[in-house]
Length: 596
Image 1 (cartoon, helix red, strand yellow):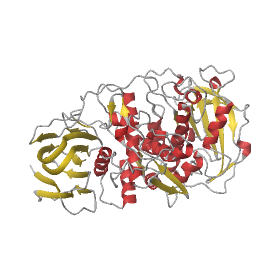
Image 2 (cartoon, rainbow, N blue to C red):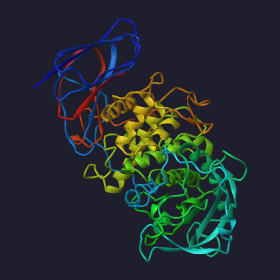
Image 3 (cartoon, rainbow, N blue to C red):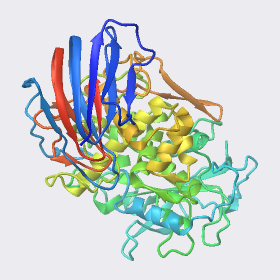
């Protein structure tokens, strides 16, 4: 058994050039490592890669809270629980560690994809790998001189079709009517046209749903996606400006032809109106099946689906969605559906851009989609997954309960990469919702460290949208070719704990202290500027729990670590002077020490 001894001292010394020191990859022959940190350094994080035993000594001149972040390097298998013993018995002020089940209030949580669609899209991509036109760059843009043949467009109020929903069954046919057609519109990818179809049972005339879609709703919603007012003023231009074209010519006779028409289909996804008992709703989906001519139940057109009933809800709050005056800007669910347009459009683009990919993972695809929601929030005038008003670039107020991050705070220790895993009392649908939250938190972290649009483009340009692709992208953007994925997870875990400190630099920076008016996180793509707001994970609450869930009675909450996960442990509160811990780290478990 190898014993690694590490002493960390808080001493009066010259300030270090960096606020952190990585101890990954220690020399096995070194039995003792000393890291000195200047007295005026208020927060620090240190990473230790070791199997077997670690003896850690801290000698602090001023009081600090000490946290251990344990990271499971394996993306496929769980890890045993580390053991921690201290030279001093520990008493902390944390509340009881009993987590309750999900809240049962209506529409408390939302998932963005219909069941099974994400996995099906991956299977379809794999079956057509190599079918995309070869290009020296995988980043495919449209032809600036492409023109729409308007004879291919339908007639509003007259054109109808039977739309096949995600179920791939004869009973999953939804009669729809064309309610909007933009005609040819100039974009940064050449001309495009938008058509919006609405299910007959959801339309204001003769519909039978409790909340019906009107022409005014359709017109307002369509303008968000593709506007004829000018270039670079809609979701289409803003998202393709980062990620490239949504479709184009391919070398496959089995894929649909490119006609420049994007279709949005509004219907009651799941046929559940507002009767969901799980507390979750499908807001929308993109299904690559519809891009394939030969698939049974393919709609044979470039399209994505949006829930019509949620779009029609008038209420200004999630708690009271059914009462009020409908407004795309002010009604809660309609505004959420604007973010959903950006989310599903990312999936549409990714399906085309990544037809050659060797592997794409659901968690990484959803991370990219929610990251797009985040980075265009102030352009589309929708709050997005951050849960803070889109034009407020600060970290928001304490007690924030909306967006994806409250749920991440409550379950920060579930697997980033495998959403099927979780405690037995957490239903599978709820694990999926928690997975969305984890994926967004990780994507938000990556964007705020590695240049916003730059990291999104780099990920999209890899041969796979998965852990290896994300790592390759971060290595490319950061210039750190030695970085490992477990190191990336560990620094993310440290950044979670340090997100209430706006003085942190990369790679621990969630929060730049913008003050709210002007963004500190800015980036560019295709000549346009994109902004991101600050994040302080201690500002979010879920039920009675505030901030990230931190264990105190044991290193983990579940007796081990899920694949690709972090577990957070409070080792000491207000520590000054010297304390020593002995830790047994199972194989593949990494330790990050955070002092603040």
